[in-house]
Image 1 (cartoon, helix red, strand yellow):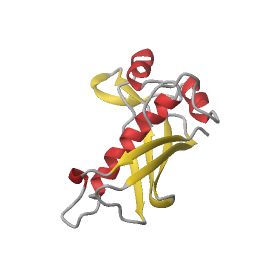
Image 2 (cartoon, helix red, strand yellow):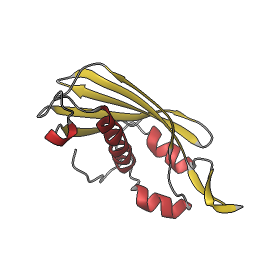
Image 3 (cartoon, one colour):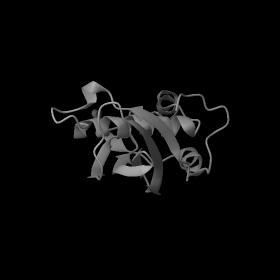
Length: 149
């Protein structure tokens, strides 16, 4: 499976009064890292959504295990990969590393969705396109992937 790596710098505004990263910040990073994973697979999500008539891939299940605290000024590395594909869902595992040690492990189950043809104000799951599965299953980033780690 493709593993996307992204550098994260803990900013002052990411921290709670105790001086450690406030837990919701990790959820925002998980989302940013999922976008980076798709980009590393050669699929900008804005373009991908338009091509497939998709409105998003919302999270339907989320788990996080906090192992080591991170503080203002820490440099972290996030490693994200898909660990499971379903018919219309996929699970993204996020490892946040601090000085090479696992600080946070998160799992987000997301569902590929489009407008419900019977009620466009609602979403309905759609099967994951083969192209998406194939690219996220690749062993290395897509050629000419341009983003800052």
